[in-house]
Image (cartoon, rainbow, N blue to C red):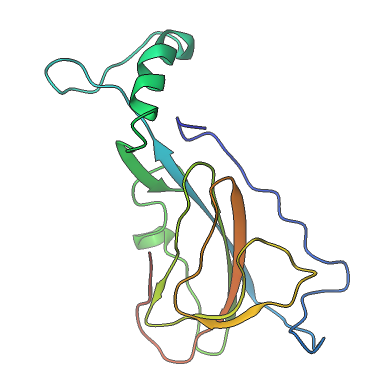
Length: 159
């Protein structure tokens, strides 16, 4: 997990998503966002170390991890995974559902230029969603989801 290996399984309700009054909610696209913390050991010169096997890196990686300061934080395992040709897109009027997971630390997604119209911070779809959150809270080791309907053309940054 501290080397970026984790995944998300999110099971949606059989009868679909609902708001607090039980009204059906829909989405046009789902985006998976896995936030990865990497803890890569450095040598005495400050250069990242390499190892023949993962097992050989265990002691050094554990030492870096115990400081709780990742050397890298990336989405979906690599730099640029959600930018340029890989950007999450939506047309005006489309509703997207970003599903955000974080294996290690608590995190707070935010959509610059928008907000979560409906948010399930802990992925509990049987509970009523929170509404109109600018920033939401995803606990380490957990996943959450939000719905956002694009209202204006432009670039919205998901951070």
